[in-house]
Length: 280
Ligand SMILES: Nc1ncnc2c1ncn2[C@@H]1O[C@H](COP(=O)(O)OP(=O)(O)O)[C@@H](O)[C@H]1O
Ligand SMILES: [Mg+2]
Image (tube, rainbow, N blue to C red; front, top):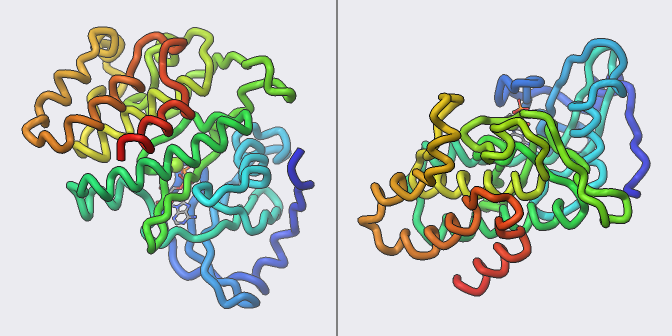
């Protein structure tokens, strides 16, 4: 499955790439804007420092495995992986507008046309990875990147997992409690066994709240969050903003489908994409 992974020696990097600026202090590693001297082209580099043996680090290996295997116009494309001492450099295509959170803060509130365009591209990317048997598990605006031409590139596969058996027949249950808590589904917050794909769908609902309202209904890890989720207080949250009728219809329908407490009853990515396509 997928291409064999070639990990190069980072000492080659000095001749091939020049660091231009730092983009972000990532939680797993710093991100740089770099320039390929041979191609005369800009890339982004995520530099992750690890302890021990790189292949023993599940987060680094998950990110590398996914980027190396998943190819889609709405998923960030891997260029190179380089290893030196205790550092791995992941070189990938550069998304000029960086992340969606930044775009929302700089340019928001965004127009409904723009929101629906971006959101359907996000769904296309998630549909692809879910069909491939991979769940992202960290679908937040900071991990949705945008190019100069507003093409969505889903990034940051550090928490991603294979969520079904090789033949695609058996769903694998997750037990780990990870990710940005405001975006976590109730079944993840309760730290029970959960299915990763429906948990991604919940995050897609919260993500839509953020893009439309520039805010999220459930904050942090307050003990009340789970109770609020059960009481579906997101409806109250959305009501605060429904003076704009244009926003309320389709957005409301999508939220109704994504933010369903029971993960088994939650919409699948295929159904969600179909609903959006048929109504835009
Ligand atoms: N390929 C890229 N092009 C442009 N900006 C990027 C790229 N990759 C990451 N970034 C920027 O760096 C931030 C952190 O990257 P990310 O991979 O999400 O790391 P972390 O694991 O630390 O969250 C992103 O939110 C984005 O702003
Ligand atoms: Mg991230």
